[in-house]
Length: 204
Image 1: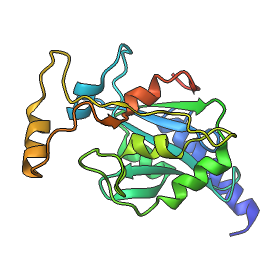
Image 2: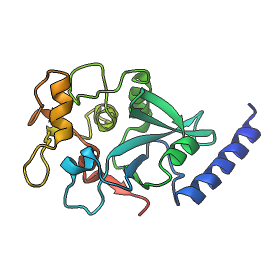
Image 3: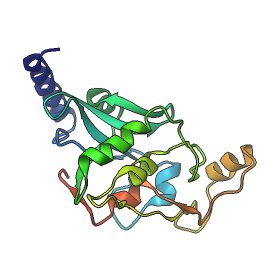
Image 4: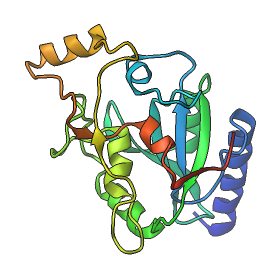
């Protein structure tokens, strides 16, 4: 594809993106946080003080640079993958998407890390140290500063709601796999990334 045609396609896709989700057309390495229209098993146990309940995060990536086609790198049920931005927006057309930049990010190195994980399976059990990856773990593992240090540290995971109760979803999930619930084990979640001081929102 020649460069003028690629630029035109990018412009058209950005126009579609802006119509569907205002201001979702940014820079390489931006994060796209998804606040679902309805609460779910993830938002029930990861809500912070913020009024937005986030259950997913994806990384904005332009194939060929900022003048080429926009994609997101994300970890979803099918695994770590590259999803066209317009497809991502369509899939989340009923949700709210908040775009943010990460201060101090070494963009080329971080994106390279994420691309090397494309094809890894999704981590349905949210456990660290294996080849399976979940959405916020993808960002936590890959995003580094210019000195090579990771921007996001792990936190103790919790599977308890605000009342301190573990919802039935999590009890049943780990029972099916004959695994203990990894309460207190190191991990991450989209809400934690969303509230991190290095994350600066560029859309409301």
